[in-house]
Length: 300
View 1 (cartoon, one colour):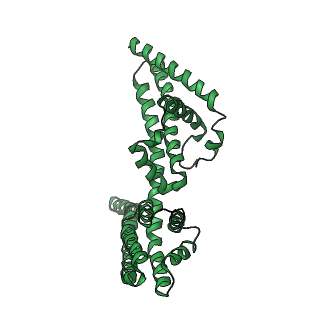
View 2 (tube, one colour):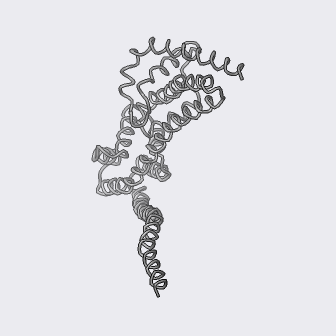
View 3 (cartoon, one colour):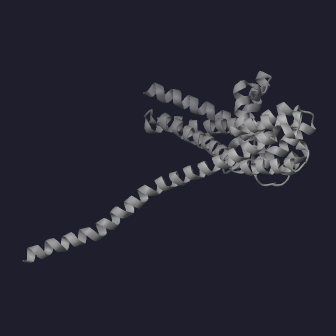
């Protein structure tokens, strides 16, 4: 046990020295970046400059950016769904900095607890706390992704209907896209459409821009819609208007089904509380009644 305590004390001291070095070296350098982080998603963001400093030292040693790996690119795509394409890489660095910062801050405390408690439980508590904090951040990101997908799914039928109506009225397909994209500056779907317009203005091929659009939106219907839109641009609106109308009808039907499913889920969630309330009322009413009945019998 004493050997374990000594090893934990040495490890805690080493991690604390690293933490102190990073704290005083980078606390001002990354202050602006830390202030811009969404605190509702990223817990304890005030200490993330420690992780940013560790990443900077690692990249200098490796002479390459951590965001170039396949895993990093996949993660960046997910983050783009929440924070937008332009901020996705920055937020990838934020997620890594968060993990490094929390590990360097919490783990030394867990290792110190081993000595104080004279038990390996300190390491377990430290690891569990780090895992809970990191899991909480990832859970918040996943929730944000789901909320964005739900919002896009809800707006999708309206968007297709608007686009179909304008094209059917004789407007050029690309102009109709821009008109619809600029018709709403709050909903995420229209923001993604404006990003796609920007891609096209910068010279990106239509197919690549629409592929990126479908990926960022994250719903399965968007890939089919993208194919129909490409067909409308390349072959003329007359060739694709029928498919677009049919897709608009399908989207509205699917929205109705999703609304019904959400209603059923909400009803199921209310079933248990209602049952508990019913049992509570039953107990309040029946128990005194039974008690009074037994009281009457005993008096006879």
